[in-house]
Length: 385
Image (cartoon, rainbow, N blue to C red; front, top):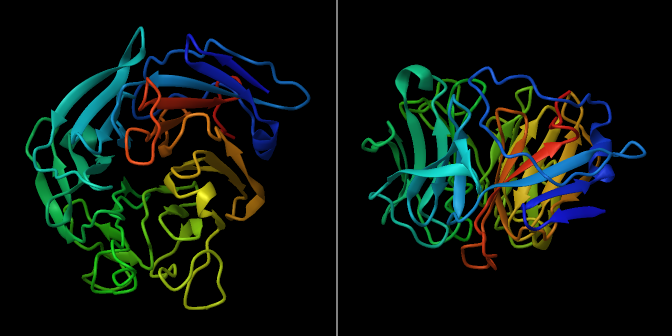
């Protein structure tokens, strides 16, 4: 059952099949964010009552009129920095709101970026010490390579990691600080598979570096930034409370994947897709047909994992146990409702933020695209236990 309010762009969806996975969780207003106050968010005006044990998912459009919003990272005040891949803009979303949702303000446009294909201004991460160092990290394409740079907003880029292989497709691009304080960088293979298994190439890898861009202590190979290999095109990473790392895998010919990333493991591209029998390669936690997946962003709230899919045009939801074992079957949400979905992130207030990616090749943009959508699970909670 779906209740729609077109005038307010707010939907409430009863998804008992999805939220049955979280029946062990207590729902309600999430705890205040320790890093800052949550933004002043517009409330969904459409609602539906939970019946028979079902719980609600309230879906609200927070911002509209963006162009391929790619990366999302939150500042201590609860606002978000969002990158636009093709315009090379960094915009700030919130915390103020207006009649259309959260206020969107351009922070700066990066002239160093060369957009094209799936390259451009991609991932963004906020320093864990932002309160004191005011530093932001971005992943971007130039004419000859992909790079990671740091900057203070409205300041100059300072490249810290260069020489990441660049191609029209499969440029990777996600950035995130892990629970260990190290910066993780996802890269694409960008070829027919020659770079992903090559330990000397930065392509088709997940890299682990210090905030200065140097190989982190404890990496599988000393003085190498490579953390894992055998990837086609990872565009989403996230960690659960047990410090397990999850990553999407997109762009493969037959299968999309959600992997649990382990130090030094090879995830099989191009030799295998999905589950295999070769002990040299690590099997995914879940795989789907490419037409139902080709997922990008990954986010975690407690034991609920979400991955946002481009070709599949849906959000896949999974529930895991405390030791990371999958419970039941993955459930789909927002299937075909908003078109291509790219980023999904856990917001400071305990909701999910999801971006659409319809202003690009393969997309069919609606008048308001591209959009940022907020998902709140059951009476304002968002899967918090």
